[in-house]
Image 1 (cartoon, rainbow, N blue to C red):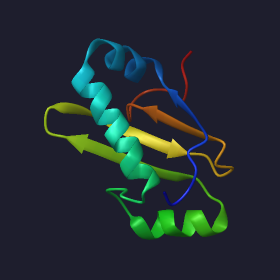
Image 2: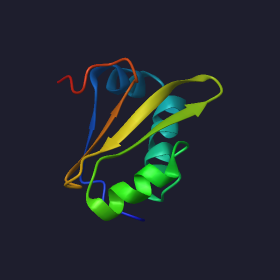
Image 3: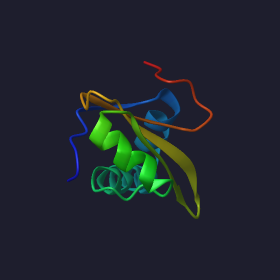
Image 4: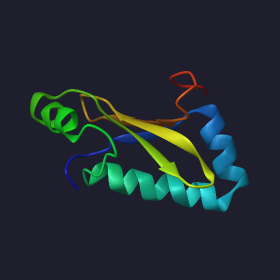
Length: 92
């Protein structure tokens, strides 16, 4: 693990789909593991700099038949949010 994820939160749409689709839930968990290990699917340079400079770390994860998800770890490393790219930041 390259960094701590902190508390993990799911935005409303992700949470709803996870509770109704076990394959999507597995995709989210697998993506969180990839995220914490530095497999970001996007500009790795920006995230490597964010680790060194305590910035936000983010990545979009895609899988053939699944909706894309966005994972954001806050600069404090106290929390990580999983959401759909078009979803609001947090929905409880």
